[in-house]
Length: 194
Ligand SMILES: Cc1cc2nc3c(=O)[nH]c(=O)nc-3n(C[C@H](O)[C@H](O)[C@H](O)COP(=O)(O)O)c2cc1C
Image (cartoon, rainbow, N blue to C red; front, side, top):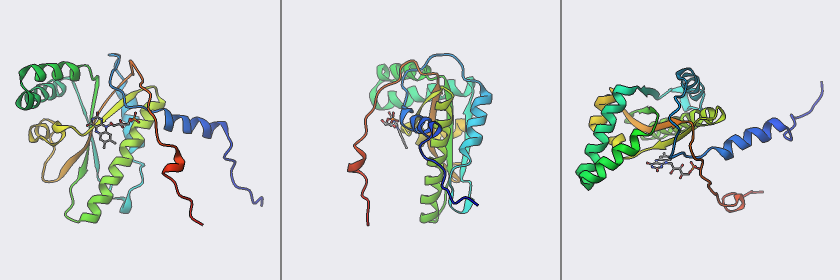
């Protein structure tokens, strides 16, 4: 039997790294709808995230047009309550241009360590989802804004607040504009110990 490790100098691996590096948070989307089948596939791929004790603490909700309208009205109310009517109307309009709406929840736990690990697993699942969509040409924005903690949002989505919390509201769609980003040089965040 040959005692060889797999090559890490492959085109496939370089392309994979390009997906990891190239994914950007998208603010501006085209209004072209994303096929539901693709979203379903991304959700299925998301569930293969690493997950201590395989608790599978996540739940995914896609929000259709009726739910989206309720979210937009709520968004307007939340912003109006904080910043006034004009700001509320402006925000509602900008959110109405987010084509796809998806919510990822995490099961609540009284056990602090388990909660920590379950939330980490949900975040890994979200990243799987975003990368899968990105590879298919679909951009996204993960948000944890005020709406994701508002009881009225839980009502719209049908989340039992005692049992779960929102790990992210994800907007998705084909990007109108892909912004640039930067990261620290890896040497600044990486220490190789002997
Ligand atoms: C847990 C989490 C919550 C986030 N919440 C918000 C948010 O509420 N508003 C926002 O503008 N961006 C939010 N983002 C997106 C980040 O701002 C974004 O990832 C960051 O600017 C880096 O850009 P990139 O994703 O293009 O690399 C969130 C990202 C994560 C991981």
